[in-house]
Amino acid sequence: MHNKLANSHSPSKPYMAGLAVPVRELHANHRDEILRHFLLLNEEDRRLRFGTQTPDEVIHHYVESLDFDKDTLFGSFDSQLNLIGMAHLAYLPKAKGLPVAAEFGVSVLPDGRGQGIGTALLARAAVHSRNTRIETLFVHCLANNRAMMHLAQKAGMRVEYAYGDADAYLKLPPANPGTFVEEATNEQWADFDYAVKENFKRSNDVWSWFLGKPIVRPT
Image 1 (cartoon, rainbow, N blue to C red):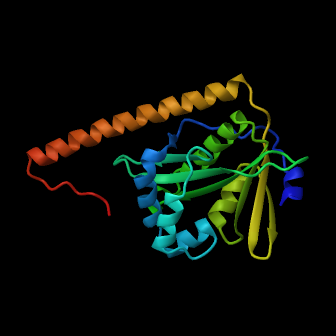
Image 2 (image 1 turned 60 degrees about the horizontal axis):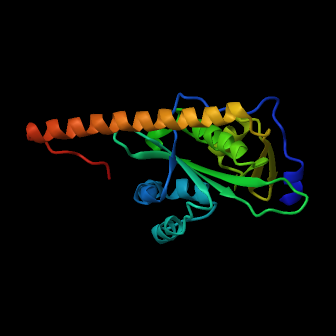
Image 3 (image 1 turned 90 degrees about the horizontal axis):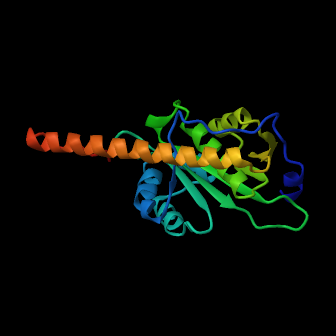
């Protein structure tokens, strides 16, 4: 893999994040939402996300072992503040003579697919990677993960296939003042969007209680 990272593809222009889909950085206090997100994935979605069959107990262990000081996680929330999409940016060990790299993993619940959430998560991760001096963004997944491969190719990543797996690479330009402004703007927009959804949800809950209607929570 390290040799491949040294020759990672560089797109014609940097892959930039937009404001269409708000993406927040996640922290340790989001651990319960992250766990719930993964448990809502069906068997096939888990296989595609983790590359193998992944029972509930493995999901629990994975979420419990997340190190928010070492890696970075991002999420997109729907109108009910469910974590509809999330990405894990894991920093790979440094190797002498090779670019500093991070691995990107993403999952989107069925109700959120086709809305640009995966694209927004990848874009947010790419900008954050540039701002933290990551030189290459790396994706490893099953070759039949069509959604991930489409996302990688859309971002201009170089994709290589071998023995049922696929690796994708994106060489990132160095950070500049614009990328720092972009990331800060995205985070502010995501925080504002979350606050609006939170207030709207609370208002709906109050009205549901006042009218004697049951408050339905997704399961």
